Length: 444
Ligand code: TYD
Ligand code: MG
Image (cartoon, rainbow, N blue to C red; front, side, top):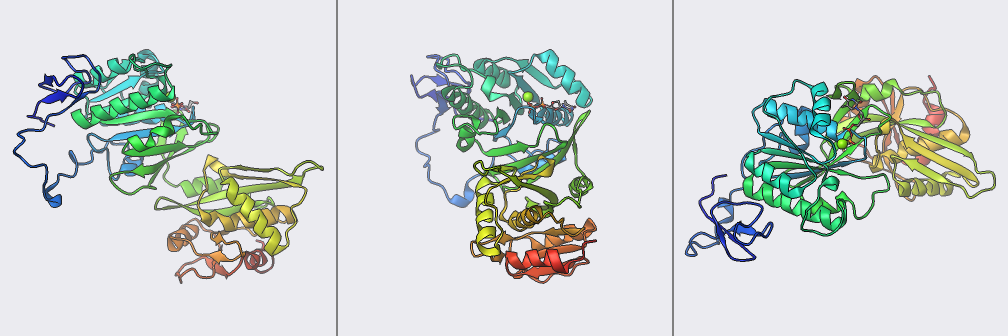
């Protein structure tokens, strides 16, 4: 980004020929702004003539990652990648750094948590280490900003924001004012100097309020990196994307040499499915534009007089409570005095309303201790009256069931006609769906 206009300091009004994190006149941080060139030129312009971006998206070379951004990272964009410790954030970004560097992008890794030697050891395991890949091990924000400027980095990876600290701000690293200041200055760097910046943030399951997710509004793109450290499947999900569509996902498998793209996630998940267990059901969910078959597992046990517990992992708690209420009120299923557990296998998260129906089927199967028919999947939203509502992408979901060789799919009655090799069973209510699974669809 060649700039001809000088920069002025908002603190001392001093002029600087080029942008830098620190004002050369008064030493204030992050106070330099672009001076408006020639007051005569009006700031008003036709909307159509406004330049949209600094450039075009630049692929990093890790395809499953690039797809989250609609093809690649935009120069000057800031991405927050958050996930639980051990999810594989550093691994993913090391691979992104290797790939981007190998394509000729100047990449700087800012390692605030590990020594440069530790990072080299990990990175070498992940691929051929490009000689040009730059690293700085520091917890100082100022050092990181200076390094990014001096190296003319086009991609800066900051791992992690919680370990970085601005010297002129009170409080320990990771404190909310530190997080904000660090993010603010990184954003300023991206906007003025044009590197794409990826910021790593650790979040815990409880999702503390003052954590890195509070920075979401400051960045252009937010990617949630999900997956259980005990499982192999990892999902990167674009939960916010200022320059395009959100909801795109990248699917990876963690292996001995890092993360690999999953060619056939449905197959992977289905392979682990044990169909004859009462309480499990296959759901067809949509992750971004991709249909994915996942297994929902439920377990219902006597609470032995204690307060009945509802425990869910990967499924929205409120949805389970709602479903249980509907099942009691509309289908006569009694769950009083029973502990209910529900989870999604593969460490995935099933948060769309489309999982209501398979969840209801799994729960009724668990209570009646009868397993569902083999090769049966379903999708559909359950309303408070027990009615089944259609969900988006029915055709894609059914096509995926067919591709994976499933035989029966229960869908909401209002689902549009689809030509398919699987047997479609339409149900208007959750009660009807339960009856289909129990009495109509053959068990084998
Ligand atoms: P890491 O990327 O360090 O997680 P995060 O930065 O999100 O905290 O990696 C976490 C786990 O991945 C760790 O338990 C080790 C495992 N792992 C592999 O299984 N294979 C590999 O090639 C690498 C580098 C890590
Ligand atoms: Mg890490």
